[in-house]
Image 1: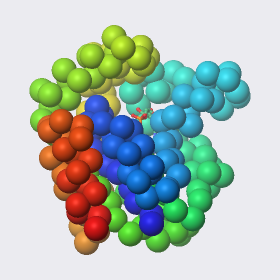
Image 2: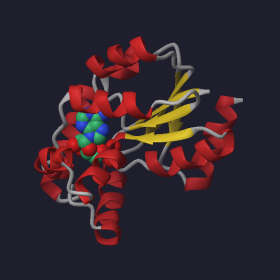
Image 3: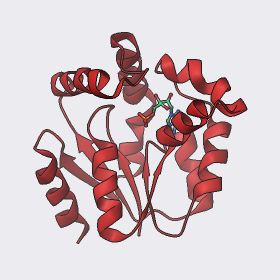
Length: 174
Ligand code: AMP
């Protein structure tokens, strides 16, 4: 199975992707995690993207596509990619996607969740300015993907307890 999980920042995409990956034995491919690893290891790539990520801006398509190509497996759930129509078109050339899960959530709840995460995990892009910027990027660059994937789209209410969100996703995938 080849899946994509989409949604605004802070909707719990990573948490849900891990659950789905375990259930269906898929590789969890998170471009954000890949980039954070590069930064932690202080690689050349990590140094290049650190400022961009911290500001909540999007990293260049060629960097992201290289990472995805390197890590793509037969069965996967993509989390945080594609984030633009351009990336989605590039992905079409690499593989065929079965379903696209979109986590729907209200901005107020997301902001509260992100503030909690900032305290707990200390992610450098969970500052108020970066959060605003990431929302803007989502609305302008990523939201058009919902129309792009309209025939494969599963929309799930992300404002529920974690287990209920997982249940709804699994039911829709059956
Ligand atoms: P995430 O963990 O998915 O929220 O991603 C954290 C940050 O990594 C984003 O705010 C971007 O700076 C960068 N990033 C992750 N995935 C992508 C992508 N597909 N395209 C561009 N930038 C990305």
